[in-house]
Image (cartoon, rainbow, N blue to C red; front, side, top):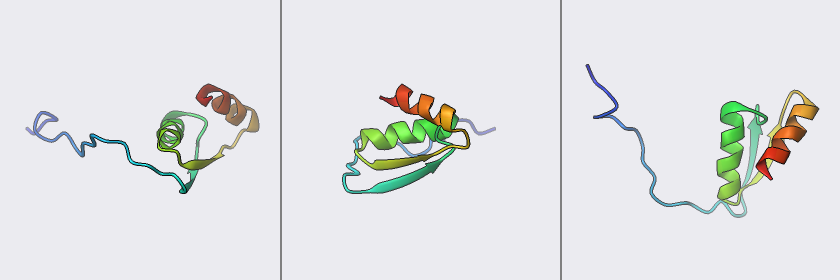
Length: 65
């Protein structure tokens, strides 16, 4: 049986700059979408958050600030 001990996936040691890049993230108010937005913000990427519910999208935006 193989385990994560042997297969850890891609590892990134340094941050990359996304300055000047634009991203559109769907489902950005929770879960993977929210964490994706958080990571892109750290990389200085301009992010457009697409959410089904405007109120939940606004709450997510406040969490990220």
